[in-house]
Image (cartoon, rainbow, N blue to C red; front, side):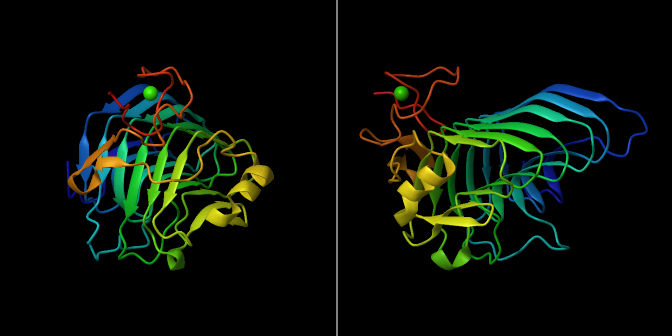
Length: 267
Ligand SMILES: [Ca+2]
């Protein structure tokens, strides 16, 4: 699915006069690219509905890294956008085993004011569109009532230090859990993490762990060693620091422990 005029996949119930239950949705095994607003999946509402038990998995979502077009009309151009402007609950939203490439604003945003529970697990985030001048982050948790877990993900960030596109931005101190992720910055001077207004660079790695309690069990940032990222192969080479470095979240795995990222290394 590609070059859509708005979102590729939109899971939105809005402006209803009654409170509805929207549940048990799976979006899997899609290739989604180059859309006008949200390239991958949008999940949102501005009312009193309850959303629960969504699974967004095994999708490849990407934009053209060389595109010069910015989403117009003030749109934020996310790869996956989850927002709750209402008072209903968006809960048990599970985003895992996806590969998201060359985002133009953020790979995933969890935003707006309503309550949300979102699990971001075992995804591979790779690269940004370097022609853009405004980014959120690879993953942005920007809702004051967002309850997110960000675990077992690879962040391969090639943005320049001048672009302020960190791997993770958490706007409000709260209940976000960040663990067992493998971070990598091509530009070692780029901003790694932004928590509320505290920014951390690679040289601050141990300070970041001590200050926030995030990523304490994550490997030291390093190149994940993809097999052939130039040709779209984001599986892991032997010797990758992502192999057996994750934590068991209940998904199948090889070897002594789960790997970090979307693909388990098979010897
Ligand atoms: Ca493993």
